[in-house]
Length: 108
Ligand code: HEC
Image 1 (cartoon, protein in one colour):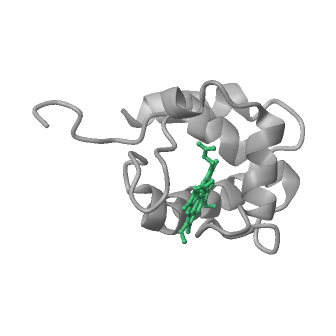
Image 2 (tube, protein in one colour; image 1 turned 60 degrees about the vertical axis):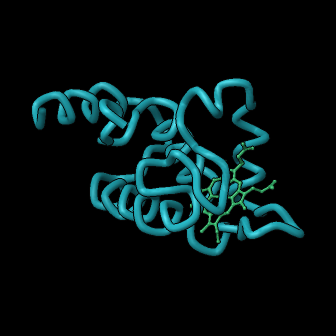
Image 3 (cartoon, helix red, strand yellow; image 1 turned 30 degrees about the vertical axis):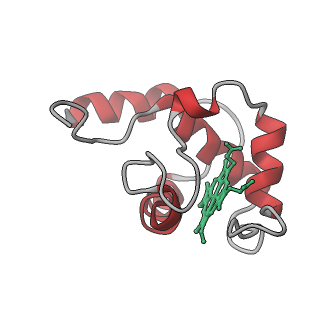
């Protein structure tokens, strides 16, 4: 399991503009705790819509980037620009598209 996660990290950290490992940890915890507050701990949705890969499949990076950076005026979705810059947001989007959070998919 951990080896798997490590491999994922190594495989992806080669590209440019990636947050450093310390920042990645912060961003992951932001994703879980802050985004999770509205989108669900397992990102299956709550107050906000699901953020699972299949839910986001049809949307462009640019569209997701704008939504996360600027928020959606008139909805509960807040702008994250003050906390997360564009590169970091793109990294978050990759996270969302790449990985299913650990969840109880079976039996539920
Ligand atoms: C206070 C609640 C709240 C928080 C916190 C929140 N969101 Fe949202 N989010 C929403 C709501 C509500 C919507 C739906 C907006 C609409 O109706 O268009 C949304 C929409 C989105 C969308 C668009 C989904 C789609 O299908 O188009 C994305 C992507 C998204 N949020 C990502 C995030 C990320 C990443 C975070 C954390 C950095 C986050 N959200 C934190 C409430 C929240």
